[in-house]
Amino acid sequence: GSQKDRVLSEEEWLKKWEMGNIGFHKERGHPLLQKYLDVLLNGRTGLRIFFPLCGKAVEMKWLADMGHSIVGVEISEQALREFFAEHGLSYCEEPVPGISGAKKLQSTSGNISLYCCSIYDLSSSIIGKFDGVWDRGALVAVNPCDRQRYGSLMLTLMEKNSSYLLVTVAYDPSKHKG
Ligand code: SAH
Image (cartoon, rainbow, N blue to C red; front, side):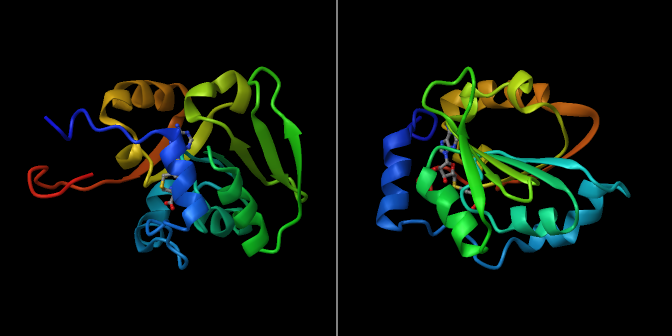
């Protein structure tokens, strides 16, 4: 019961970033992306790859360096600025038409576009559709009451032949909180 009703607010996430309370961030990237990279790419090159709830995931840089085009979304502007700064990437920012208060931070090279807004403000008419999704720390971070909405939105963002890598866990909710 308590698991199902659990909610982490946007303010609480922003606070985590401010306090540097970001134990979820993996400085060296996720070994499972390396392991399943072939499944994600499936022999294709120059893909559009989406990173929901991206934080400052270093895998965005990895895939961009392989020639793919990256789109991420994250509510913490601090996280996105840290991403560009930590990789020494210059970027420009612009408002997002249709989403008040949202910003798009785009690498000068053009292949990494990170939206600073809630994922629920986005739609395929704004960010298009994707050939691949790397979902790590995203579905698992979504409040249980929003899972349905998140899943439906993700489906609308996928191209016909897209691949979706999801890192998830099976656990006993009575033994672990959150
Ligand atoms: N995927 C990243 C970050 C995981 S933590 C990684 O692997 O490191 C989850 C992230 O989602 C946090 O950075 C939090 O600020 C962000 N977040 C939470 N709710 C969000 C929402 N509704 N829209 C966009 N980002 C959100």
